[in-house]
Amino acid sequence: MNHMKHFGLFLFLVLPVFADAGPLRKTAISIKGEDFYINGQPTYAGRVWNGHRVEGLLLNTRLVQATFDDLNPQTAARWAYADTGKWDAERNVREFIAAMPEWKRRGLLAFTVNFQGGSPEGYSSKQPWESGAFAADGSLRPEFADRMRRVLDAADEQGMVVIVGIFYFGQSPLLAGDPAAIRATDEATRWLLAGGWRNVLVEICNESNPNYQPPILRPDRVSELIERVRQTKGDDGHTLLVGTSFGGRVVPSTNAMAVSDFALIHGNGAKEPAQITALIHRTRAVPTFKPMPVLLNEDDHENFDQPTNNFSAAISEHVSWGWFDYRRKGEGMDEGYQSPPVNWGISSERKRRFFNVCAEIAGVKNTSAATSQTSGSNGAGKK
Image (spheres, rainbow, N blue to C red):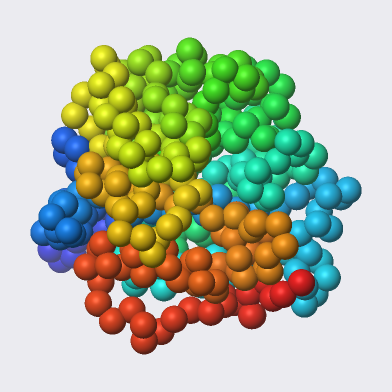
C-alpha cells in the first residue's frame, strides 16, 4: 500500500513536468570552433572532397518562400497556380514539406527561410506585395507562424537545420519604425524558444545595408538586435544561435561580427570564384572575427558543370555554401526556388545540377534512383 502511495506521489510530481516540456525534438545544432555539429556530432563526419574537409559544414539553399502569402489583393493573383488559377499558401507549404526528404537524401543539411520572405521575382525594384509575417506594429501573424511551425517541425524530423530570417528589406519598411522592429524580434525569438526547436540558426535580417528601414536594421545598429536575441532565454535556459547577413560581396560590420555566433556572407555579384575566396579572406580578417563558422547562404551563381565555381571555392576555404535560385525571365514554372508558385521538387536541369554537386560533396551515393520531378500534386505546373 505504501508502495502505491509513493508511486502515486511520483506521478503527481513528475507528470506536470513532462506535460509542460513541449514536444520532444530530434535535431539540435551546435557550434564548436569553426564547425557545425548536429546532435553532438560534426556534420558530414569524416568527409573530405577533393582534398578539402567537408566535416563541420552546412550545405544549404535559399528557400525563403516556404511560408509565403500575399495579403495585397492587388498583387496576389500574380502567383496563381496554373492548374487552379489561384494562389494557395497552404498548398505551397504542404508541397514544400513533401519535397524535404529528397533534398536531405541528396546531402542538403540546411535551408534558409524568412518570416518576411524574399522577392518573389528574384530581384525587384519595387515590391508592392505584402508577404511578411508581421503586422505594422511588429506583432506576429498567427497564420504565418503556423506555416513556419510546420516547416520547422518537418525539418526537425528530417534531421535538417533551418536558418530562420526575421526581416527582409523588401517588407521591413511596412513596420512602424524601430519599436515595431524590436517587437517583431522579441515575438519571433520568444516564439522560437517556446516551440523548443534546437535545429534553428537565426538571421536577423537579409542583407543589412545603410538604407534599411527601420534604421535599427542597418549595419551600425543591427548588433543591438543580435544581442537582444542572444540574451533571451527560454524557460529551460536555452538560447538561440544568431547572426545577420549583408549584401553581396559585403564584409560583415565589426560590431555585428563581435556579437554573432557565426559569420553570414552573400555571394551575389561574385562572378568569379576568386571573388568568393577574397570575400572569405576579408571576412576572417575583420578585427572582431573570432573562431566561428563562416556561412554563405545566398549566391545566385551556378556553373556547377565547371571544375571550379563559387560552390567549390567556398568549400575549399571550409565555408558552407548556399544556392539562390529564382525564375529568370521567360522560364517555365519548374524553374526557380524563390519564385511563386514554386515547384519545390528537383524539377529542372539547374536544380538537378545543384543537387548532384551537393550529393557529390556530401559523399551521398545512389541519388539517381529517385529523381524528384515535381512536388505535391504536380507542383506548380507550366504557364
